[in-house]
Image (cartoon, rainbow, N blue to C red; front, side):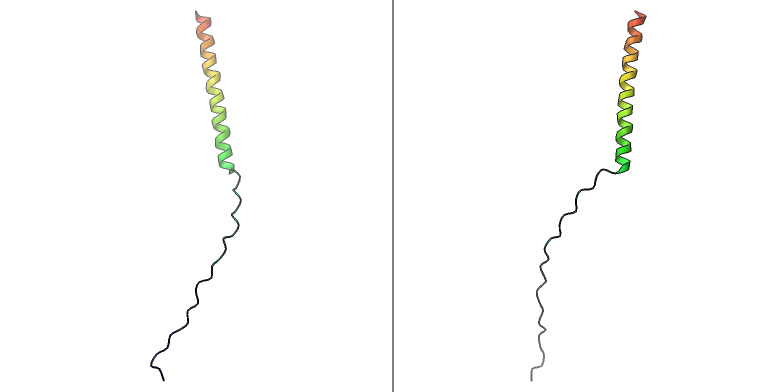
Length: 59
């Protein structure tokens, strides 16, 4: 009769990778930031054009 025994350890199960989750569309916050940035850029262009017109009119 043996003094000790070995437990049979099974190898780990290889799991197949799950399907990659589809990329989420841009969040609402990101869309809001984009809109604000676009409006600011348009406003800056309008202000610059107005300044140029005023300078021409003053000449």
